[in-house]
Amino acid sequence: MITLKNREALETMLGAGKRLAELFEILKGYIVPGMSTLDIDSYVAQYLQQQGMVSQTVGYAGYKHSSCISINDELVHGVPSAQKFVAVGDLVKVDVCASWNSYCADMARCFIVGNVVDEPKMKLVEAAQKSLDAGIEMAVPGGKLTDISYAIQRVVESAGFGVVRDFAGHGIGRKMHESPEILNYGKPGRGPIIREGMAFAIEPMITFGKYDVCVDRDGWTARTRDGSLAAHVEDTVLITEHGPQVATRV
Image (cartoon, rainbow, N blue to C red):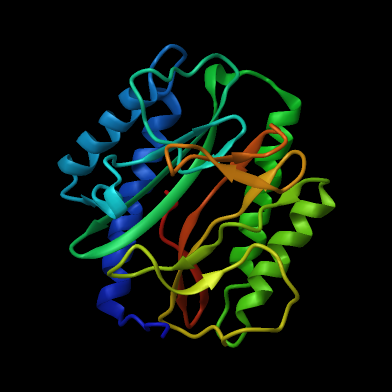
């Protein structure tokens, strides 16, 4: 069942989203060549604690970290490690979900380490961001859920990239994962009607090559089967009478 949030709940989610958005603004300058992914995760954990937020990934199915950090061909759910270091030009994806006053926000962004001008990586990230924006534009009361999915797929594939089928966005609220599942591909005009009070974590996951992915032996890290680059972006979106309101942007 898709839960509808009242005004107080939506305001609290805005507070959670604002705090995550501010974290990601800091990460733009924080992630530098030579640091480990565990260094990044440790900073995220410290920030969340300072903000009175509670990580929703620590303890989830045995996961031990406050973020997922995925590099280059890794798509999502990369496990932070003291032995994994970021290098100049790496495409790093950071994904964080945390609650504030019992309501969650979920956010992911891509970072090219060292501010390197890398046209292929920049085009991939740009396509992911544009597809996210296109999906958000369709998150309006009265629309159908797959209108979001179709908008994302159309932008990604028109740019020549692949849309991952194995993972999807989701509803969000008191829990990190709620109904409905929000695919990043599909035909428009299907699924539940979008209603005021719903809240979605919309998250395009795209690849430079084929969209097939596999999971590493750690049971978490998902990467492209063909070794091509992958991008992942995510925003928490609240459905209001006036349309979508993005909680996770400054």
